[in-house]
Length: 408
Image (cartoon, rainbow, N blue to C red; front, side, top):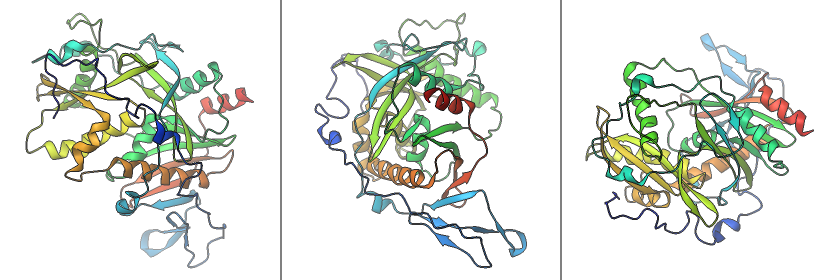
């Protein structure tokens, strides 16, 4: 592991995450090697009707209780995932260097501004912190409001900055792409997202699955992450009289291209450490339980996968992770370079970044080829059947409808 020493110069940046010339990524092919599927012609189901699409299993019937069959009129298409990681490892599509095109800030009171007033600067002194108590200020913690219309703010930011959506295939938040890419290896976590195609652009809206209420322990652990973000950024003090408000955030709007898919995403950024070659050098801030010989493989297999996906897809070159004990005290702080994480897990073949990209390309090809203009869907991953389900929906976020009407 790379751990910071006191004389380490964090300003001495290595080459950009995507290389100095970005040559490999500028050579992105115009078409994807994984074409959209040709969906079967709709046929009213008879006694033994089953279909298969080019991308995965498509079934018009499902068994109900007692062996009886029933027609699922909400299911448009499904994609059986299976175990095709070896095949995907040979089909890594290029990812064009992410480019920041706009930004927005949300203050603690919910006000939104299309600037960087809520962006925090990284504090280098965090690497000397030992035994810092992440519980300080917990009694005054203000959790994030559930009713914040983040996607509406993102779309409004696009309009305010006159960013054209011609030839943009997907508009989404980064977290939706994280879910898709991570499913290449993580088949245990269900998720879903809204899918709405308007003017040839597919909007992937955020949908949260119901969660059990946080108990005291889980809420405190969530707070430790926010507390570290505050401690690792400049112009902060750590006194009982101050508190952490999770509602204040900064979001960068980023344009990139995965295979043939042109994407605009919103990505919440924790902080930055200066500007290099005209680009902000963003840093992701993370916390994790201290690791030892028994837990290092699980950490590298699960957490590093999530760290890498989140940072790489948005072009974030560095991650700073605080390792804490079970009481919330920092034991050490480590710098990770995003481009080195895949090498760190390569020897034990825990996962491959190229497989995540190829899997996402395959899913986006299947999805874009399956949805129809001006129709609404729900995309869901079902771990029990290990498949993606695209289902009809009768609801579209008012923010998307407003956005489309104002563009027209």
